[in-house]
Each structure stands twice: as C-alpha cells, then as structure tokens.
Image 1 (cartoon, rainbow, N blue to C red):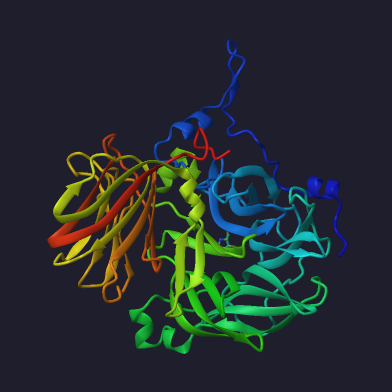
Image 2: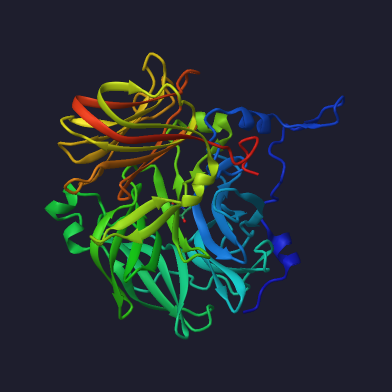
Length: 517
Ligand code: DQQ
C-alpha cells in the first residue's frame, strides 16, 4: 500500500492538536509556574473519577482500536476538543501495561482537510498486518472506510493514500448507516465487518473480503436482526429495539471458548449474541444486554497477552449539556471487564482482577441479619469497591446504599428485587442538582436455587459500575451536591436478609490530580 509521507500528513491535518489544556493558561511571574485554570478546575472537580480512564479534558466517547501490542494495551478513543457543540472527531490515544494505570499519548490522527475524513475520523479498529500496526476507521461525510498505518509504538500514524478503501455502501442496498469497521484475517483473506441497517427491516452487520486491504468485495450480511425481534412483531415491542431498522453501531465479533460472540450498539444499548460462525455467517443462539442502563455504550473488546477477552465501553454522562460544558470534560471509559461464556451459554462479565491492586483500607463484615438499614460506619467515600454476598431471605429487596448523605436526602442504591428478579440501580435521589439526570435502571438476573446475590459495586466519584453474579451489569452516573454524601450501608426492605459477607475497599487514585497521567 502506498502511504502518504509524515510531512504530507501533518500539513494536511485539519486540527492543530495542542497539548495545553486551555487557552486561559498564564505564567505566574512570582513562581514561574504555568497556571492553567481549566487544569486546576479539573483537578479539583469532585465528580471527576479517580480510577477510570478519562481524556485530559473535553469530550470523549467510543473506545476505538483496542489492541495488545508489544507489552502495552493501546486504547484509542473518540475525542473532540469541544463538548457542546462537538467538533470533528479525532482518535485520542493512551496505553497501559496493566489496564489500570494509563499513559496519555499524542493524538493518533485527526481529520485531513479535503480528505475523505475531512469531517471526522469516526470509530474503528486496529490490527497487525505483516508486523505493521494498522487502523481501519470511518471517515465522514459521507461515511466511508479508511486505513492508516503507524510506527511500532503506534505514535506516528500515516493515512493510506488510496483512502477511502470502501467509498460507499453496497450498490442496491438502502442502508441506514455505514460505519465502525473491524478487520481480521482468515487464511489468505482479510475480512471486514461494517455496522449498518436495512430500512424498515433491522440492524445489520455487513461483511467484506479483501486480499490486499486496498480492494474490498461485499459478501453478504454477517448477521441481521432476527425476524422475531423486528419492529412489526409483538415480541419486538416487548423487548429492546434490536430490529428497529436503526443502524447497528460498533459491531464487535470474536471467538470465545467454543462459541462466537457478536456485540452491536443501538439506541443507547449494547446487545450481545452468542452463537456459531460457519460459511462466513453468524447464527445467534442467545441474546442479552452488555449493560442495562443505557449509560454504557459502544463497547469493544480485544484479546490481551494472557489470552483473556477484555471489554471496554464508553460511560456516558447523565447531566445537562450546560453542566458538561461548565465542567470542561465529558465521558469516561468503563472499567475493563473479562468475558467468558458461562455454562448456560450466556456471557459472563467479571471486573478485571488487576483492579484489586488499587485496594486500600479494607472493612469487612460477615454473617449479619439486616432488616431496614444497616450503616457501615467504618467505611465511606467516593472511591470504593464494595463486594456483597447476600441471601434475600424474607426480604422483598436487599442491597447496598452508596454516596449517602447523613440525612439520606442524597444516596444511590443497588439492590435485588425478588418479585421481578431484577438488579436495580436507583440514582434518582443521588443529587439535589437540577442538572443531574438520575434514573432507575434494571437488569434481569435469575438466581439459581441456593445461589446468593453477589454484588460488586465500583464507586468512583460520578461513576457507579455494578456487576451482579457475573451475569448482569449496570452503569450509573451520580453527581451528589452534599459534602457528606459519602456514606455506605446495607439494606433489606419488607423482611429480613442475611449478609454472608460484606467487603468494602477504599480505592487508590491512578493519578495525583484526576488527569490520569
Ligand atoms: N460514535 C462514533 C460513530 C459510532 C458512534 C462517532 C457510536 O462512529 O457509530 O463518534 O457512539
């Protein structure tokens, strides 16, 4: 492939990406230090997470191009230098040795004026071609597929001079979108999926093949919305709108155990299908959600150096646009989840075990009966991991309360509701601010006979991530206003529950100043 030179690339680059955080920075005459008001504001912001990956400032959305390469996990992400209104999307870049601590790297690539990505470098993936790190992404407008290659450190990127490599959707297909490519190799052929959808039919993942990465042939849909989940069926309206005809964004397709998994993002939810792959077609056997809240989106996965399949997603904000602009930052990357297939053929999602390296002070409670609210007075804060094993007993509902003010005016709760067999994350009372949009999020969880409820809850300033029995995940955003909204407790409603064990850990920050550097 002929690549444009680095000099051409830089001169064509649409955006001069500055490394300073804000234009208001000034030099303090006395100390000789650069005073950057935005940097200070970000460092002091109590809603800015301490152990999630964040961009240094401004807007972040989808994780892109996840790959393990030469000792590092590389995370690219959709970045805009403005929040609302958003500017053209670029590929931000960071790397990590342990997927817990991150190192910010220079912007990977930005739109090229007059190029096929002049209005944005949207989501895509990375892969290795003959030892050369290569990215495939969507250029807009219109949506076309482009390639770029990099040096060994994935720092210096050059766009392919033959871009776009796919300049339009397949002829004759009325598609609802055409973006977010992924590439892998099968024998001598490269295969590429592109997220799409067919009008009035349902979402679709289109499959292409190529021998040289530069010329692509459309084969067929790898998978389309199953008929029973299309809009015109009774079942579709009772379930999440997988088959609305809206496009499926960010498809992610990979082998896992003896199965294949396809994830797609649509209408605020990430769906996954577990099934089989043969004749270059995917056949789904089970279907569920990666996260029930709608605040975890555009998940992508990769295989790490230990052969583990790791998933990361975009944790969206749940506060007003004005509040996001005022804060100077928006969006976070979820904690890494380790994926496997459970004996029932569903996806098992567990928090990355290395997160335990952040454990600080530990408080443990075991074998307690709870009826009503039981405070955990020895542990509190905005940076915690809580593990609860509970038998619901006669209680209608039981779980934990976090970020609870002394008078319980502000709190978020995570519980199991016996009658509905739902995990419930309730954030509607987590903030007195009119800018905060809380809600009640639900995820189905059928406990097996004798199986206790097993909750792992991560609280990180404004982010709450819940893992229930490895099968059901919920992500929430909370923006407490009160300085005393730090309390933790266990509760059981309308009956008595038995706490088998309760472990709460203070979590250490991954940077000194909430800037994740
Ligand atoms: N975000 C990207 C698109 C993708 C969407 C643009 C999903 O490529 O479809 O930032 O959040």
